[in-house]
Length: 392
Ligand SMILES: [Zn+2]
Image (cartoon, rainbow, N blue to C red):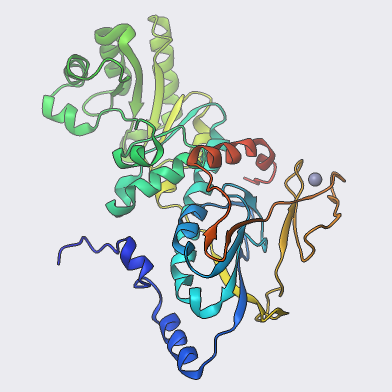
């Protein structure tokens, strides 16, 4: 069977993507007649020293997976920042009704949150400069749309995969690939053909590093396309790169003195947020690939914190159902067992608010799932507040 090695939605719902030890646990518990009411909590232990926060994403998929199961699901809103040991998602129900989904639940959350968090780091680094997600080719094509969706939600200004545009209702972005220039045989001619045949609404972004010197190729393309040239893109391989910032400065100068101040300079090719910080004074936009599409995942774990209403947990994990309280001003967060607590921020003294939301009650979704645009806006609304937590 050629299914490209993909588990489809039905396989995930049937529990086929679970780790076998959960299936064996289910078998043992069923045969022994043990089925207890539990509370299971998802949180992350340990955060990188430079970035002590993460962005919670992937919730919509978890809610769809658990809809119809006899469980209650609580979570912080998708797109919320979180810190170490903060409960991001909590499930209450009979263990046998949802236990086998632990692998899939963590997979949805860990992967989406990793991509979203990295995209936001890049956007914070870039300030008002453009960040585009171009890394779909570094992952299995079955998840290309998912990667670009969460990259966009995390703060990327655009993405390149067509399937993601179906998920987001947004047009994809792109420049031209080296293959077009190689097949036409000349950068300027390739851009003239692109200009002749592609919808005028599409921006003309020229890749100028295929054959010749970036500066001289830029001037040739600018003189051929004039006002229609929107941007040029530098994708020079590292073996030929020299100092990318100096090359871009030289191109900027030569464009400006010839009256092409409107032409923007894009850079791509193995860049991450540290390169963005280094280059943003001269580069107008960044195509970010692997560092977003293959970002380090969040290491959430999912643990029992209550059985039959009694607090219990493994060593190293605080027991009991918890609500997450957050300071609106500085984003300080603290878990507490009281639903209506009067807790004040130790830093700015403002009253903390409970941000834990009940999304599913006995299998029924009782709170509208946020659209990607709402989640993205939530993430970007905290961009400046999160900047101070970054120690680069
Ligand atoms: Zn505060």
